[in-house]
Structures are given as structure tokens and as C-alpha cells.
Length: 413
Image 1: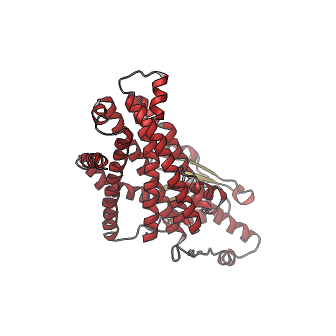
Image 2: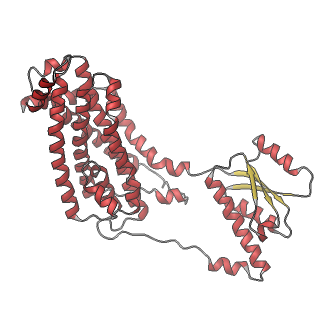
Image 3: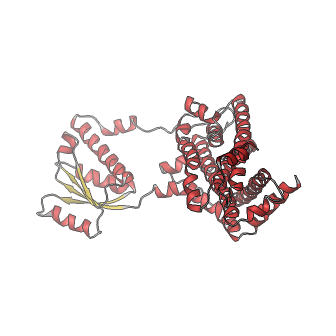
């Protein structure tokens, strides 16, 4: 145990003394804050300058122009269609970036719903959807007036509702947006941390192997002790970094002077969640379980590789297991109690991400958590035992070309 502790202390001190550790520890809260805020910021678009070529009879063109200006997303100007070469002149304005685009409006908009928009950027779905919404409302009002129905009565009847959501059970009092934000945020942190720290373990093993330092180390301690010390040392560094990130995030949220939400759909989706003690415990338990599971595999990859390029290729199957778990997170957010979500939360290779995401998105029965933890612990023991054998063979192969008989003897030892 004293030898393992010596390796743990060495790995911990070396990483904590690194300047990059403190850079990432200080920049980490800002990075994850950007991940949390950017979706709502990037989803917004500036005010677009558009023109409405009005070739329709009646007041439809004026109504659409006024609605576009009142929406807050557009600065619209109505251009009569009677002028010659109006389309060519507006096209030139768009090409010179003085205009975002123009809408061609005819009587076909009321008769068949056909309109045309030409612009420099037609891939901005937010802008196109806002334009379609305004035109659709104006065309619907024109159709109602043609049929003798007062559009104001219909508009009053179609007034949208706001559905207030509140969870029942463990997450009582939380809104749907807070539950989604918490699950989304936890999934990103778990995926990033387990992958990065696992690769750090692999890089450390590979560095000692290529520099032949490992030959000196294994002369005084067993390969399993060396591997376990590395995993525990890097794990201690990760916990310290999480503590720094947690304190930093707490300070940033406490100093936040204004809410992030501005009424946009993205702002309604991402809200600052409440992190309870049970949620924090679930997060740390599954992070440690996932870290030990994947770090053992990454350590075995580093021990069996001779060069950094070879290690990068060999690590891809292990990394893809994490990637698949992360991708499945979005399906679990849609239905945390589906068969897929329950299965992934019990499979040890995906449970370090799946179970915390399910816990944050909704209530999870206690027996499922207990069963998942038992399976995860058994898997950690089995994977660690196999990884230790592979690690031992990889270390003993350093600088040697063993025969098949020697390989078999090393694995059985």
C-alpha cells in the first residue's frame, strides 16, 4: 500500500504543479458557462432589413410590412410592384449587403399560399420561420376578411397559452427547462471529464514506457501497483479540479446581475438549474465509476502501444464507447423511462453518463440505481483485472520481442 501511495502522490503532485492544470481549473467554469449560455445566444439573430414587393390587391402588403416591423426581427419597407426593374434593383441591394432580402407578394398568397423570398442567406431557419409566421398570420387575416369573419375575434380565440411545468417526486418544484438544463450540463461534463482524464492516464503510461522510466519503476513495484497508483493519482487531480470548478461556478452564479432569459425559445429551454445534494452525490459516484472503468482501459491501451500515433489509433474503440453513450443522452432526455434509457443506465459502459442524465431529467427508482451501481462495481473489478494483465504484458514487452510462450506465461502470472 505504501508503494501505491507513493505513485499516487507522484502523479498528483506532478499534475497539480503544472501551469496547465491551473489554467484549466480557472478557465473551466468559463468554458462550461459558455457551453451553457451559447445555445441561447447563437439562436438569436439580429434585425434583418427586408423589402416587401407589393403586387397584391388590397392592404395585404401594408399589413405584412407593419407586422414585420412590429415583430422586432425585421426592418421592412414596402415597395410597389409597378416600378420597372424593381426586382433587379433590389437584387443589387442584396448583393451589396445593404439589404438582407426581399419578399415578393402577389394575390397568390391569399389564393394558394404561395409567396417568394429572395435573400443573401436562406439557411437561417430562425429568420425564415419568423418571416413565415408573420406572412401566415397576415394571409389568414385576409382570408377571414374575404369570408366575412372578423379577424380580431379569431385572434382572440387563438390566443396562445403558456403551460407551466412542475416535476413531481425527487425533482419537485423544478421546471421542465431546469431539468433539461441540468441533465444536458451533467452529460457534457461527465463525457468530457471521463474522456480527457482517461487519455491523461494513457499518455502518462505511454510517456514512461517510451522513455524507459517504467523499467526502473517495475523493478521496485508490481505493474498492477503502478497502474492503480496512476489511476488513483489522476482521479484525485480530477476531484480537486471539480471542487475548483464548483466553487468558481458558484461565485459566477452569485455575481450574475441579470437573468439570461429574454423570452426566446432557446432561453426557455436553458435555465439555471438547482443542484441538490443527492444530485451531486449521484454525479460524483458515477463519475468515479466511469473514470476507473475507462481509465483502466486507457491505461491498457497506453501499455500496449509503442508510439503516440499507435496509441491514438488504439484508443478510438474505447473513445467511441463514450461517444455512443453521449449521443444516446438526447434520446434519454426525450423519455428518461423508456426501455432504451433503462437499458443504457444498467449497461456498465454507458451507465456513468446514462444514469446521471436520467436522474437529472426525472425520477429514477432506487432499486434501479442500486442495481446499476452493483453492475458497475463488478464491471470495474473485471475490467481492472483484465487491464492489469494487459498492462503487465505491455510493460514487460518494453524493448523486447517476446515469444508466444513468454506472452502466455506473462498473462497467466
